[in-house]
Image 1 (cartoon, rainbow, N blue to C red):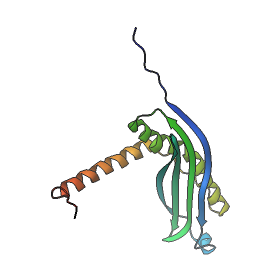
Image 2: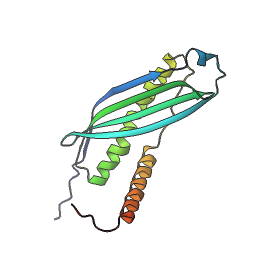
Image 3: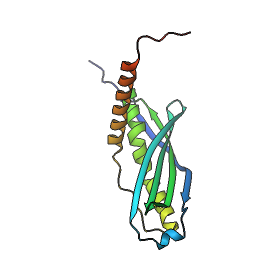
Image 4: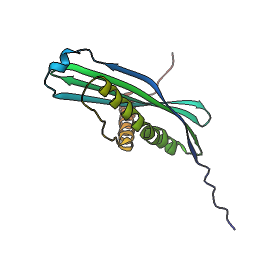
Length: 162
């Protein structure tokens, strides 16, 4: 009789919290007199910090810059964080969980925070579109591989220490 491997994977959301928030309207009140034709720039990023064995803080950083006629209408920055417990995941799975799954859990909270800030700043309602964190992680990993290959090919032999 052969034994079946036991799936010892464990995922738990410990806490979700707003780590940092900033909202600026550098050109108010004059920006309210402009015709509202916004140009949006969205920047997303994540950071992961191992707090303990199997315990990680994941921070989703969202920055929205809205310009009207080349003047900044508002700049909203949110760092939405969570503490996650992950046990039993192999390296590739752990990378996927921390780089895609956890940010996906945090995103609705960050989207709500951005929307609230923009509304309280007296601007038209602003809702962030859904984000495909799987695709962003895959793109990031591909760029890292290309960078590693480029650095590898540009080195001219083994490094020596002096």
